[in-house]
Amino acid sequence: MRLLRTLTLAAVALALPAATLTPAQAAAPSERTHRSYVVKATASTDAVVQGRRVVLSGTVRKARRGERVRVQVRYDGGRWKTSDLSDRVDRQGRFRISDKITSTRSRSYRVVKPAGRGFRAGRSKAVHVDVYSWRPLPTLAPVNATATYWVEAVKINGRAYPESLTGSASDAQGGTSYNLERRCRQLTTRVGLADTSKDSVLGTASLKADGVQKYAGSFALTQSSPVTLDVSKVFRLTFDWTSRSTDSGAGDQTGAVVALGSPRLLCRD
Image 1: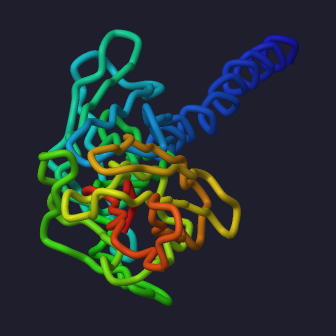
Image 2: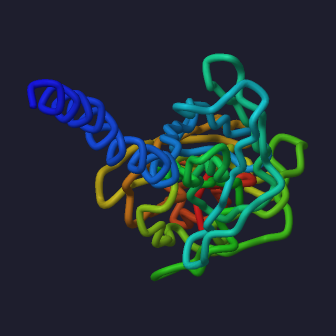
């Protein structure tokens, strides 16, 4: 009887480890197939000028050296699409991908690690990049323009400036405004008197951003000045000008053709 009890207890003891290990062993494959790669990515900038590059860098946890990651791109208003951009991770799971910006469309990026080795696919959070490009100011629709016109080119001190703005030679003052709609960052131009101005005149120019004066200058014939303005978050840009004669007692104050030579804006679509 004692021998039978000993054999029975031994059999139970041998069965317990097997019963204990079986659920854990069954769960292991399931856990592996439901885990995902963890992808983290950052962009080198949140705003870029057309023609330059954006660099995406980051890491993939659990990835092995040489495994490939791919980049998906979504343009504003569009859907996610897999691009031709890719890289292979190094021993630490790191990647670095460069994209040259050839269009003016702002976009979002995310980096995807395809499924493999029992891991489900993983993807990073989206990173958004605004794309800016240079464009002539006169291509925008003017608001409240008075005696101020777009011209194909204007000469200032003998140099031609294409796509420019000038005041009227037959008026003593004028101006125009443009709605930038807070989509631009910078304005560059050459401010001065056009070579078609009279000799004895003086012209003044003023640039305002949402009613706040950002630039003011006065010029005689052949005089001009380069101007660069920060127009970030500006809704309305205003250009005003005046003309006056430098001859004492002159009744006619016209003749100073104030010009913005090749004004260009750095804006996003």
